[in-house]
Length: 630
Ligand SMILES: [Cu+2]
Image 1 (tube, rainbow, N blue to C red):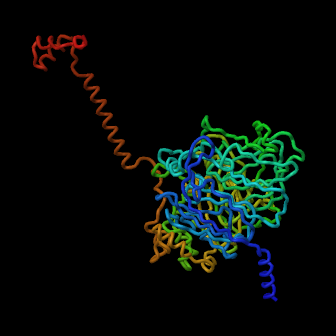
Image 2 (tube, rainbow, N blue to C red):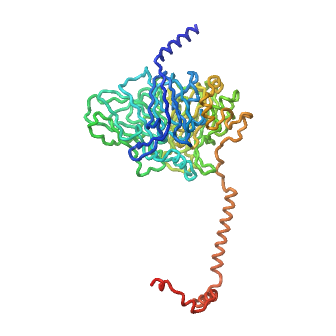
Image 3 (cartoon, rainbow, N blue to C red):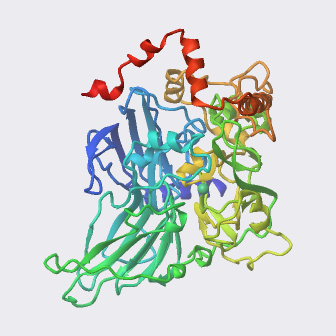
């Protein structure tokens, strides 16, 4: 009977995917000259000499084989992450396709090729792919990844992908270096010079009367969240991050970096005789300062006829009324995990360390890349894989048991907004506080007083029975979020802020989920090992690369020492030298002031004459300046 059931399931699933295709891509990443916003040239990272990189469209059940060759530059490393994909090993996929450098793979060095090879059996909707090596994707190495669903629960005539992003004029590594520097001790995030709409500006969306459009918005930027409004057209939210939601109609949406929101927009029934404004607005509350030349909003057009005038900018106003993610509900009515097995609390703080740089912390740890990717450690450590100590003490490593319900509490002891993203999962958003003390300035030592952390015995909101489920959520200033997910996807999964500046500051943790099952299902591939070898990285060992003693962390890269309290020895010496020099100066001045004073000019003259040992004629014959100038 069981055999028949399995056989039937196999027949049915292969029938469903009978038309499954394999999409093969050969991409060589490299610099491409471009002028994205029309104001200034900038080298962007494209594929095969072209930028923007292509959007990828596949159907549910299809296979992707993407060969990525690093042709960027000799000293630049790269990788690709498919944001939102589960890479679930129970479907034969592999964790080593997930992409983040030093988490699930080694960096791809110049001239090396890595094959990203997976099927999309278990997901549908809007995703994106991007480099996962520092802030590299900000220079354009990012595209949409859409999994079309043969059984979509809504109807439309056409879907359009819209990438919202931000633009920096300098190369990402220069912006990064200047940001992570002792000369930026406040950790002020780099302010973009512009935003982009589908990698350009002044965009046109063509509408035909009577038709319905599915607009798939993706914030593929590095930093700022963005608002979208369309003049005299409603938007009905039907999908967030690959999860269908109950239709929710609004006139303003908010998309944080990493997030996707798909909306249905119904065109006017009859030709309206004009075009309409589509407003793209930067969330300027995220900027430390607003440069006078920064344009905060752009007007694109929804065009019924390109011959009509370009629409006028409209005043959107009431930005606080944007649709709130917390109140969206999954269409399939999936229920709240009613309790958790394990709870982890992360207190987010921004602090300076001894090198003067401002870092971002979960509790007291700012993420530092280990010497060996965490996946390598998990797959080569046998039974020890369940011991978090082998992953090192500087990556916020947590090990979860198979199928346990994990609750993540994130308290924001910071005035910034943080869109948190978890690889390999969707999570339920069970609590989301509002912002506290937004737009107020207060010193760092007041963070404890101003922050409202999660209080389990008195939650701020009712627990939703059908919480919104997505892979990236926004943590508000000085507030908190509570997330739940089931550890049913064996793998190494990165949890981090998708403001990439905060990620490079170390705002990340690594979840090691059911590593024993992972070991049964996955081995390090030959391509994986070869890319590591080329990068001089071991293909076995703990976080520090040791295999003789798995608890020996000697040589592990760690965060800099804390900023010293009070004076260091060097400080004391400098202080003493300064004090002595000051005292000597005071003494010299007083001594001079109190010493014998000369009362008249004649005496000065005589003493000078004596000192120079000359007679009156010699002195009077010295030519004067005025004589020289005649
Ligand atoms: Cu952040």
